[in-house]
Image (cartoon, rainbow, N blue to C red; front, side, top):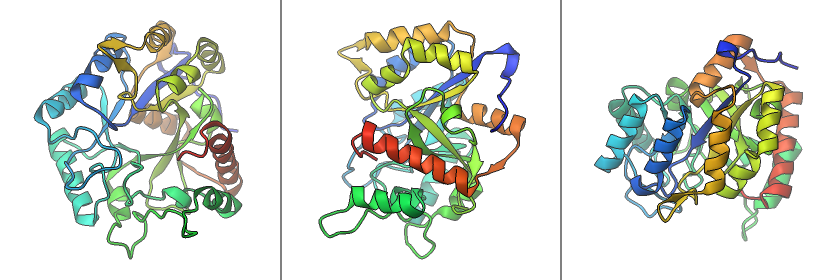
Length: 314
């Protein structure tokens, strides 16, 4: 078992948020970030750098919208991390992905350090069934069979595919999100993160996250008793969410979300973006290559969570 982390400046625990841009507008998320920033928290906001030409399964505002871009750049200047959620909201071939990465670099003066696959993009890297190994993959396939008997395939890591961009990911992106788990203490649920997986070489380091997709699951995970346990365990929480999904409605912050974030901000936590948190863990523990036993245990835990807590949702 990896050693317990001693957090900087005598802090008891670490807490951050990874927020995807699904359904984003300036109107439905900017107020949330003003609130988060005023509390002293610094978190990670993923973006789509370019606007797509096709109809997305799930869309939102991209960095081609100038008010949205200016707001993203202001967030970065204020200490928030800007990350990537694929280059746009639908499937992109390799050259579009390359263009999107270069656009991100031009807009934010660096390539993205952190990344999460978007569910509507078939250039997802090691996504869908490719996230899993052995019997865990068989179970996943049974959960996701289509009428033709086939499971969804994502091809970002397949070198013969026009969607391949694995080399671009390896060259430019440090951390990629994989499993979302049912524990506020992400580091306890996935104690080996950030880790490299030799079976998935185009990703430098993987990280896990805690379940918080929408406002209900977010506030359930972040409840008072879980906050207290996170501090007691000296853990780290990376909440994975979509802040455009019910957190700010009719001009008002969700009251339960507001209360819980205010509460945790008053605790002795280290509130930094995902990249900063993972860099620190790697600095303390060194780089880790996941073993077969560790991989199987992590995949089984995620499948259990998926089947019994998210009704099979990806």
